[in-house]
Image 1 (cartoon, one colour):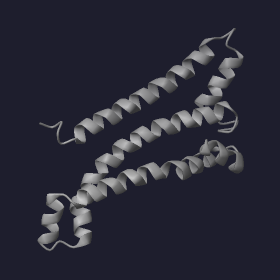
Image 2 (cartoon, helix red, strand yellow):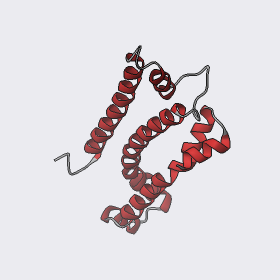
Image 3 (tube, one colour):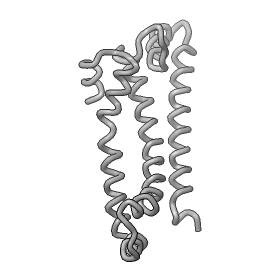
Length: 153
């Protein structure tokens, strides 16, 4: 709902969409990364590195960041699917991308208008939105499994 409100204030367009999603979606990622950093800070390898005299920046660069990065990448793949659906929805209701540019939401909106005569105009963009979102979710699941140390055994 916040994205829709931002779009009403900012006006339609691609830059407005990017700004609206950036302003509303960063909190979840920040919360996730912060929680992971706090968890990793208390692990044995971090305590051992600190005990052996590693500086805070070395600890972050060599131990914390490499372990937080996979979590952030996996979370990003899931957030991208939300952004794709959100952009399609905003374009469908007329707050997103405007002509002459096109988006899947605009294609779905025009497909609904012509649904009785040309049903494929609705079906094809809807299928591609679904397939794109599904493939990104599967990529995210695969990345999560690949970066999970418990799954490597």
